[in-house]
Image (cartoon, rainbow, N blue to C red; front, side, top):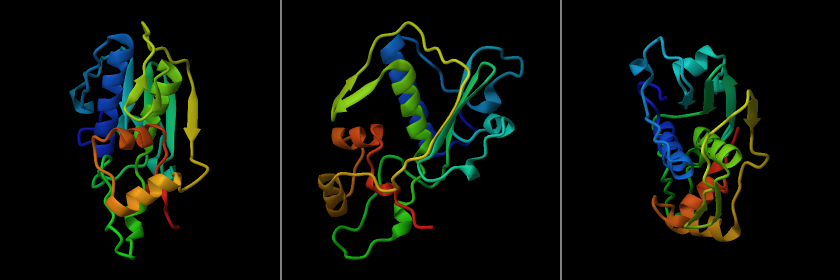
Length: 196
């Protein structure tokens, strides 16, 4: 389930969830906007991103910090939410190469929802990204999540390797490169820095 007007991060995270659940279980999840779901629906639902249902369940995205996310079950529903911005592209952050001046606002991170989906895939389906370009998906017949609440806030605001930081500052990151995907899946990102 997505909001009627989801952020790019929530849309990307939902696509990642659908793709990896199919790899692991063979089940094809459908992405549905909140307003398209009948009120009498009684099955299991996964709400990805800032949705009206998540807000009604008491999850406030304003309480979440950079890259932070919350996983919460309520009845048959699982909520996966982080702080979001509608003008934030989850796949590309470009930095002026070697300009000597960086707009630190560009480093503000709104990838919590994506990291929450990665946590679901890792924790409950055993999906691992061990090396760039490779993913380890264990086949499973079901995706089962017991009642829970889990909130994750990165201990470090800037998480990268020297090689990664140097490459990012020179050329920026671009979507579709295996190493960039690997960094996102493993939450190793330079662009988590935020100045308060």
